[in-house]
Length: 601
Ligand SMILES: Nc1ncnc2c1ncn2[C@@H]1O[C@H](COP(=O)(O)OP(=O)(O)OP(=O)(O)O)[C@@H](O)[C@H]1O
View (tube, rainbow, N blue to C red):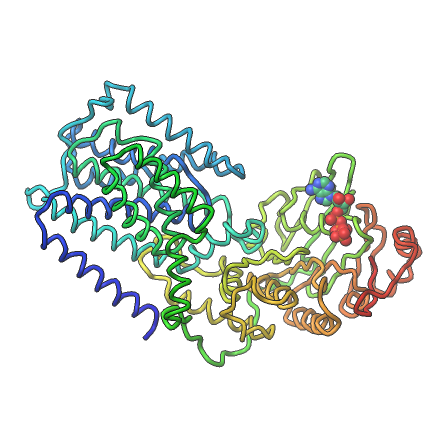
């Protein structure tokens, strides 16, 4: 049975069971607890995209809960809106507030988001408690219209069924979203931002999107509470609520099922401890610390570990298709002779000038090498070309267009793929997912299409192409292994596979042979020549002169940030300025590296 079928059978059983429970009791307290589990799940499910997938922590989501709650309260009491559109408006309003907070907060890195969200939570708390005319402070807004069907207001049981329906719909939509290119991109943003940009993902846009998803679900949760209570006041909007929402996600764990586990356990605990508020708050604090330090993968991670031991078949990966046709790269150049032309590139870090008025021209279809002693500015130049480092001066034309100053994901989408000197893989993800991430910009499924599951065919095509690329690089048998668990040489090849998956016209390789043994280096020579024969232009940085001489059509030499020579490998090898640069650097032009290859530092 496929994983999909298992999931939908499990979900149907769960829904059937959960739908029958309210029939077995008329106790209002129990029905209220079931309702709260549903509401908390809805808040946590969106928060999980932000915290669990993109790794951003927010401590102000009570503010977004308040936006939803007060939107529906004001619309139904002051403006006489019907409760259904008022409920929908609560989600929209919270989403808009989410955009307004996330746009500035996510421009900066580090704890800025946590700080901004704490500030936002405090501001909202103050506004609803002190702006009496509009929000009525502690006294609150009465008469909020509850949802109704055919003119009859929802009973306690209807509310439970409604949150069940909403929760299941949200679960199915988020699962579809998170199992496709959006979920992979959110995780990539969390693991390695620079690498995510290098495959065409706008890190900033994905962080904002995750924040907005979490804002919408928290806003809907707030609206549900206000409409079910038919009342809302400022006592609901506290810092503790923000902590509670975050805690559900951290405690449940970063998995599609984490928020459900977090919502069930913490709502029950909350109900049980509600008689002792001081113990309640202490318990949240203790659980937050416990979740952060002792259970980094939360309850879902813990259960996964147990099932791996006792029921491994539950976690067995999807079977992969058998033989596929050999991979053929797509999106090659449009015949231009000069694929990339850069003029007067200049970059200084204080007194250090790693790129000093460098001009380079990359001819389509050739292998170019960039060499020079340590610290000559090779990596900085590659970073400038790929958009990671903006140049202080100079111009770059790539594929006929000006790409100077564009962010890395835009340059990647224009057809520039790259690998890194220090590997930047998405280490916690499978080999296959790493390569699928390379294909990210070439999978056409949009956000709303993903939510309703219309991306199935595109996902299948991406999986097949990723497997073809892995096949071409001899990695097919590793497809389902975790990238970070592979030997170093295999990880290097995987990074190359991911870069090829971006359909590059120009492939930048930063020291691709670093850390490889002589046999792997020989294989790399063949791989680079094959890549060139497929029509992909290559620019590589390398210290292994054997490799440079074997693959290059053209060599560029840098020293102290300046281009000191260029030409065929023979011309460069015999150039007195190049010999002097290397002699100056190490008193020797060539030395044997540990494995016996010729290595020039
Ligand atoms: N972000 C930065 N801030 C300050 N100095 C930097 C920065 N990036 C690079 N440099 C400096 O610029 C110079 C060139 O560095 P770069 O990494 O480009 O050289 P490289 O030729 O790639 O060296 P290697 O062969 O050792 O990798 C070095 O002196 C380095 O310390």
